[in-house]
Image (cartoon, rainbow, N blue to C red):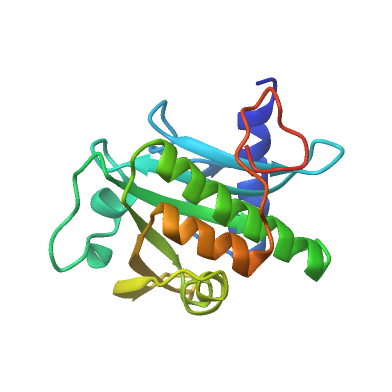
Length: 197
């Protein structure tokens, strides 16, 4: 793994603390919180030099997770989910310094990798906490249909919402067609090069 975990903490600091001005825990140029535990799975996109350029964090709702613990105002009206088939999907980020075409590629590959992971782990639904722009534009363009649950305004002034996204093999095929990504994206860290892993 080398410095993979530290690299993604530094990337998160750059994206969420420096660029987005989110008020989230950080220390010495790294952003992390109490949910960065062995239960978390990270899908990380690296460039040819090995630099992190995009990522997403996935947490099972059978363990403590961010929405339930920190953002009660974003818990769906039906209550905080706790099921092995429902995982929380947060910290989705793509390096804003990349050219637009590369940002689109990274975003698309992270979305496909998230669905591939869900199918492999028998996850039926993601509970996503994300800026409204991602829910209203990025995900629908990929063929996803977020079911927005609740919304709030962060102290930074950013509008974020919680949403459910159902996942399935059929959805994976739809998203692949929409994004033009027919090959398998998800890879183990031993194989990681320019794809989500």
